Length: 363
Image (cartoon, rainbow, N blue to C red; front, side, top):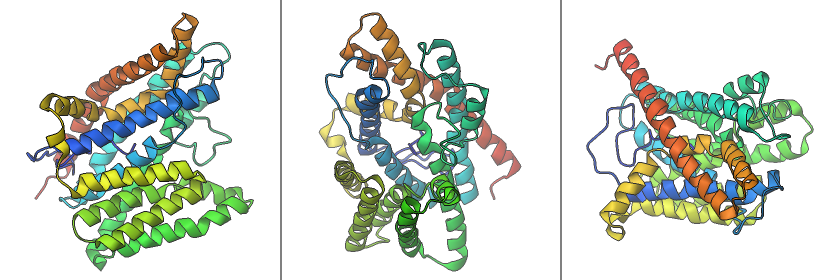
């Protein structure tokens, strides 16, 4: 979300050589809070929208905010870690964190759905699995079904990490034009949106959606916050840029409440980036719990939705009520997320980066 454990708050994330800098509780708290918003939205609102046979939820959170805010955080840490050294190693490190866990998540979720989905529920076939492994859904949603709808953010992040890698290489040659580049990206997104909405062109839709232009303003917002925190963009300029990002979100989603929530979340991200750490407000044990959960949030995001819906339905068949289903969703997400992190995400990243360093030794 955009938010893998590669993005360690205030640690060097350029490819595995962790610095000894102190973690900031504020980033852990934000990451955990935003993932909780994802689970809340999926568990209380989308669950009933997609599976109305589930019992009514005791609370309903109909705001798609968590994933969007995680993409902002992802943009911030991409820019934050990119400045630290080898840009090629940075890009390989990002791919090494995200891709293996995603591939295993797709395979594991698909197998679970094939074995455990209730009669009449979606169970992916081999074509669906292959299409999801190739991340084809943004390009042809009418042809390729999500194994888990939460996956929509993954190809966007991989594309944007690649784009920022290319822009950074260009910057090294042509000078610092970061703010101009961000304005260009925003203006291109906004200029093309009416064409996307009104031009009946499947080819144009495929390119616009496939390259993630419908949410690129979120990644831009995170980069802007980083530039502001480094005093590379003045406060008024940064606020104007962030306001434009929020306006772009309103135009894309056409949800005022979602856009207001995004603005509030971005303000919290700015406080975390520009202000002192929030550890003074939390006891030490709370910080340690937040650090542990924050370290598995990417994997939690990958495994919670489709599997969680099946588990909630199976529990309901055995008489478990709505509160019990929501608790089971949270515990299941944390448990499976921890397993995916320690068995796949971290060891795969270590192995890939060791191989990369052997092939491309640092000078």
